[in-house]
Length: 351
Image (cartoon, rainbow, N blue to C red; front, side, top):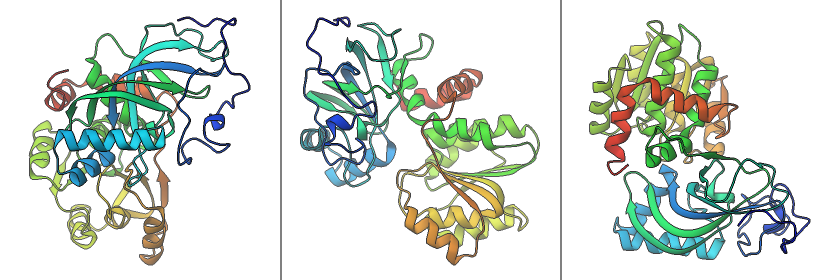
């Protein structure tokens, strides 16, 4: 249904969505009001897929025993109780894919039309959501087929699904686009760069870093999974791929100290999806260097106090899912590297 000012839209909604969050910002709210009708500055989406962030998917899978029925029950419970897919353990969400169903007359993006397929670029942890049913679950890909409805606020961002990239892969790229875009923004030729985690975000960061470094500097990946280590080594993108438990800060520091000749790293990116990896990333960063946390498992308290205790004067950055031009930068990065096509196709075989 197209926007029609004669329809009974509710009016006076906050551009940030506080009208559905009892006056606070939606992300911090315990529960959102996902009821209809729309407010005049909102967009309604018919949802058919949730792409959870890896930390949330890992936590739900492990706590549910890994069975699809148990995972579906937990996701359904969270959405029913909170009015959004906001994991109460990790505090994180993900993104969704669906079709534009209805457009409020004051929603700012007037180029969208009913039926347009979009991926939201704001977290599920702040997106009003109702689910009618849950279909197949791809735990490894963190993607869940669903039938439901979601609401995008006036300030909510979304992207059209590109025609040249399979939808499931495009969605995965959108979900982590802030990470490689940040590397492209911060990295400079000649730097020593270390990436923790070789999942989707980490591997994209490695390709982004290599583009900036060219043949200069030093590029190292740290990953705890033997299979992931072999996969990244086969890509030939990093100078060294280290199999090491990032929760063991002292062991990781010893390895990276030797590799860097004691200088440590100018830029460190942490994309791991497990807790207690802050220390390893902090010790990997040289004094005066930059450390970006792109993990929803990051503890601000642990990071701040560990850096203080280790006497590390470094710039620690909380990775922002929004970086200007981030989606185009990440899609372009993917298009430029056929190795990335194979990497993502293995994770999304039904794309």
